[in-house]
Length: 144
Image (cartoon, rainbow, N blue to C red; front, side):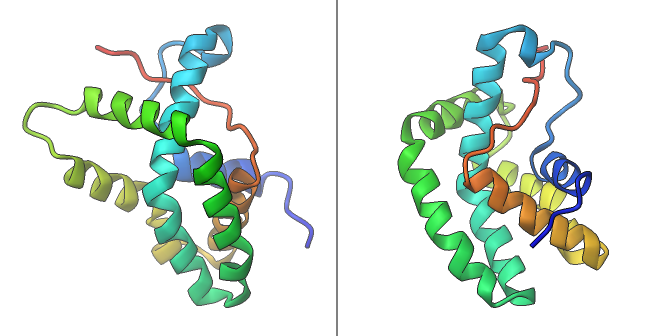
């Protein structure tokens, strides 16, 4: 299956985009690692929802995505745990992890419910690219 060249990066940015950055992660390996760790953590709860929604439109999607998801989680345990800790550290005192997860799912996966067929397909294909090990470019937001 051919992938539209701009659709995949756009879908990846939609799925995993964070707050507007103040420092470029590419300029700071520590910020880049923090971003990658955060993405790994978010993938642990966002990907199952995305896989379920994508499988509703394409029954063969589950067969492709599920093994990739489990391999991803198994291969990135340390990164996931660091990302979980970073995320917890960013929560406001009155915020909960459940509320955070619900916000992320609504913000990042909403296009799977409301987007065009092309947007939904791009997001589903973009998720497979992430699960296959593509490192997402990104920036960790400043702590301010």
